[in-house]
Length: 250
Image (cartoon, rainbow, N blue to C red):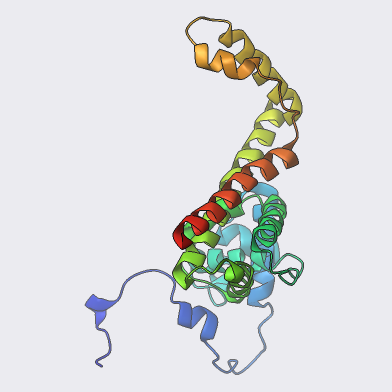
């Protein structure tokens, strides 16, 4: 097969060059820094100040090198983001061995993802930008497939189920983080803000223009509990996957 010409090449991160390149170290003075060090510095900036604060200049300043020196370790910001995502995904305890009860194991997996994304609140926004899968991501995907194996799903269906759960967790954490930041800007706790929202909706529901909302709000209110809310919504998702699997078998 002929090598691709310039017209055949596309932009983006080359996964082979990023994850499989095993070239020998360059001759001369050993590098003063490592790619892992640079990645850790970028992750720390994102954890503290958000993803938008991560630039080649800010990372170079964090490790004490010039911007141009940084490009000898990481060729561009897209590559840096790939390294950051995989580094963050590796920042969690080794997952427990699947028990064989896939619905419970999937809930455990999702709770672990939620904890991870709260430690790295930029991660939900970064995941849609991911172009390739690094070693930590591959290892976690392998674990997810082991969790879903007893469900009897086909390979592609299992990957889609895993993606569905990850998307739910990312969206939910993004909402939780945004609510916490909104509460902080307002000088109130997330619980206080939620209670204020509940009082507002009750006032709105007194209007005859919202009969269905009025009926819902007339029901006993659920306690404001972030963990309980996450578990309840997760249960709907996992139970839906289980029901769909049962329908497919029927």
